[in-house]
Image: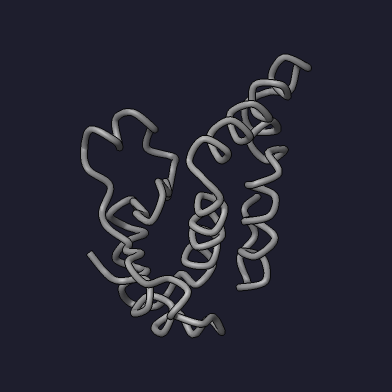
Length: 128
C-alpha cells in the first residue's frame, strides 16, 4: 500500500496532497482481479484505489502519473457520495449499451471516465 500523498509526489503531479489524506493505492486482490478481468488497470472504491500488480509497481516508482491522476479524479467523484457515483456511473454505461454502443465505446462515454481520462491525457498518456 502506498499513500496517495507519496504517489502524487513521486509522480510529480501538481496537486495539494492534503486533499487526499486517507487515500491509498494498493494491489488489486485476486478476487477483484478475477471479477474485473485482466485488462483493467485500476478500480477506485471510495478512498481505496486498487491497481494491477504491474501498474502498482509503476506507481510506486513514479512512472505512471496518468494513472495516479486518473484514479484521484475518481476519488473526488466518489466524495460526492457512493450512491451518486454508482447510480450515475452505471446508469450512463447501461444507457449507452441500450443505445447499441459496444462495451468500449460505452465505457469511454461515461462522463466520469471522460473527465478522468482528460486529466490522464494532461499527464502524457492516451487511453486509446
